[in-house]
Image (cartoon, rainbow, N blue to C red):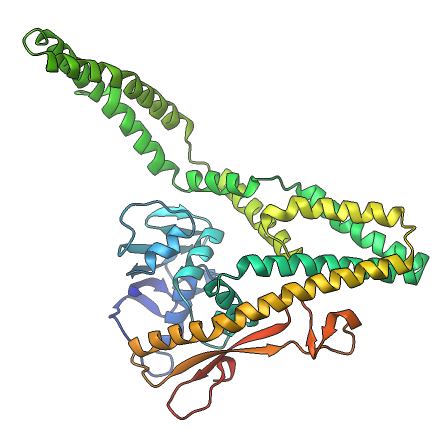
Length: 443
């Protein structure tokens, strides 16, 4: 939850601090009192655009700081690889500084972060409800994504997307062949552009994992470097270092081994431990020297991650599948260049691909139909804990209706085949007993 918000030198606000309590907090005031400015300040501290014109007259910069506490903090950071200890139930501060010189900085727990990083944290930490632009629950994909996750259907949904993509490509190939030379040329141009885009991006197998690891090191460079340097000091180079203590203790045990053989055994164990401790100390020292804070490299990594994620969304696959997608496009180009396939053969391949896609869609529909009432019941139970005992949520599955332009094999039994399956998933909400559930977006 948002526990505290402090705003300094922002528009009409000179210096303001507001503490929030668990549950519903209401802020009221007459027009011009600053209610809207509070929301703008919260939006800015969560990564929204900071307008230098909002800096209070006569001040060099404005500063907004928000303190968050409770169970939402850990998922907000853990989902992004933050390994700080004790995050469960911990507090986290986000601070945004906007300068009249045009410079803007953001800090999470006093660590400098990029705008991309801040937006990622905010997306997991806060939902702002108002004017619909931030209401992620109202987005059509939200209910489907939550339902698939709750029903363990993500793998089946990925299969659906792959088969639908294969069907669409065969459709386009057949249409281009039927259209003659012009159709083939247009298809070739599109495939060439897509293939070249992926060639320029040059995604590599395992690259995303490498980038995420590097990003975490760069984000926490100072903390990691200090920890490694401290480990080297404690183990090897500092006063009273562990290795010195182990060596002295081992020698003492050896000197007494003639009196007690058990002490000799202890000395041998200590001698055996020394190589591992020495190796740990050397590696810690080398790591401390290797880690450097590099904001420019961090920005490059963030941009590369954003590019790969954008391409994955564009081509309807995961980042890990981008390299394979490029191979698919190049293969499609090669087939197009040497396309002497009989139209009847292509039609048969389209029919086979359609059956495979419909099989996946049917399995996905079955899984969603089973998972929907279970998820609805879980959410309704949660609503009761929020003092909404009479409210209930249900998840509706509505067939995706085919349109006039839907190809014949993409429509069946009143359903249209899409990359997401053959149905729309919608949240239905009834706030009070006796009321019929209605789409959440209309309430």
